[in-house]
Length: 240
Image (tube, rainbow, N blue to C red):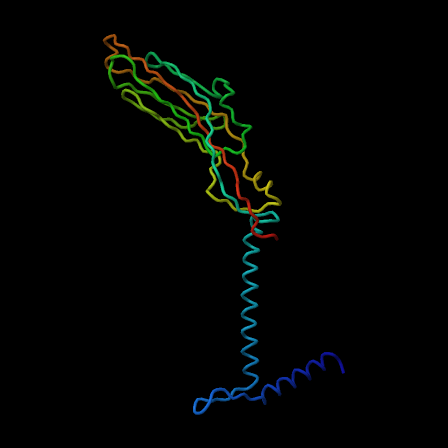
């Protein structure tokens, strides 16, 4: 007799046993009878459902992680650090005067290409009107980079003020999750070279008082602050 015949015979015997085996549950008027087959079937159904739940859960996790690439999944906290950069100051005496800075005049103090973990820049110009010519002066602040010469332009007017430009490089959320072969590889996957920042500050329009010989110059200070990111508390989620 083959193994298949033996298994078939055993299963048939088990079925006959379950069909004949009776169990009495309850007592008195509330008692009832069930067969062994019903008990076996119920237990088998529960086991199958539990196995399917585990299988689908594992498959879903595997797809979510494998789509990211890498062999291990990590999560980490992002911490920003403020770093002061270059500052230039001076005076623009009359309408049409301007000052250029950064890559436009080959000033390497504004070159951050070698910095790989910059989140963003905060470039500001603070300006004040001199003399008694009154308000009404207009200025223009242009900020750009060697790779994005179009940049951003803003205007301001009156007796002085501050113009601020935020230049994004790689602004990460508070927490990042991705896959990599190691924690060091995770950090490297987010690194990008920084830009060579530059721009132009222009005294675009004098006030009415300048026509009667009053001093109409403006003082300015252009400053740069940049923010670097660090990945801290790097922890592994799952290994594929």
